Length: 209
Length: 209
Image (cartoon, rainbow over all chains, first blue to last red; front, side, top):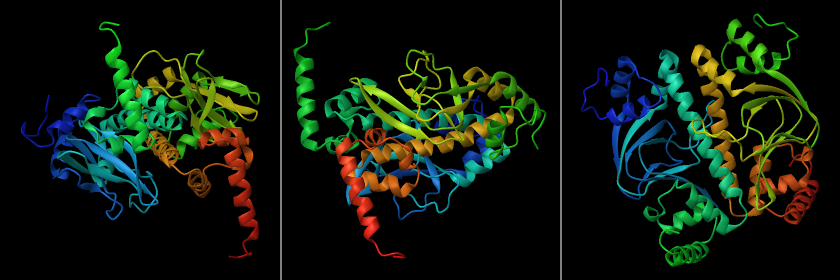
């Protein structure tokens, strides 16, 4: 059931995404349709940076988004999103101010739905189901962040690479190697060397093995 | 208001902790009192390890808990908890099986309240406020996990140490240095060197500077 909003509404992918976790009431769907905005961001452009106030989450309809921080003017990639998911710059749920230390960047042309935090807070206060959906989504994001934290603490570069590959969380072929290297905490040259070794090894394995 | 449970009930610290975020109904408090169990774990003992099923969260009433994983038989510390907080081994919210890859270890004698996941699921299904509290706690844990993930990706050991120190998240004097080193992704010797340099520097700064 896609309640009360036009079936061609731009928020449809977001509502469908949330309804995987719990039904959304018609009234709440209408709130999303009126409070959210559609956004397209060109490849390589920033969606959020520390000069912006960190006032919204984004549902990624299509495209790839990268999160990163700056450390001594060097980019450190913190995560990737391949679409059909909600992203946001890191933000303490209670503390002011809301300027982000994290950047969000489009790695491909991105179609996004901007969800203001004011809308989300309103939904939590007025719609029981928003708390159920929010709780389930946060559990998934918490799990993913814990996994990223564990991955980054594995001391050996090859084992970090293999763990990421085995997780099948990231389509490595769609990510520029320099971002993958910074996500994996290794130099570009190390990642190149590891990748060609691993690809060679895979090519030499007998078919069906 | 401490509703419907004996004011000396062992779950009191847990209920008070949750009521910081949202009032807990008397009936839900009673469920916690009947379904949770009290647990004391001696210093250095495991609370959860991969041989156990990962069937519960733990409220840390007192003591310090360390999370860690094994990588090639080496411990990698993933987080610390200094009490008055809920901890659990990493667990995907939907996927079976529920055996943990993460260990939970008492770094001091610990007083814990064991909260079975079956109890938590029952609360989510039957008590609106459980979803509000769960959503708020998960937002805080998601934030903390994102911070840990960012910390671990900073390439320079000294800057990792300083970032952790500045965050004031961890009482470094209560943690054995070898665990702190593995959490910070550096060798024991590197951490010792950094610490004595930083402490010397602090000692040489004029008072009031």
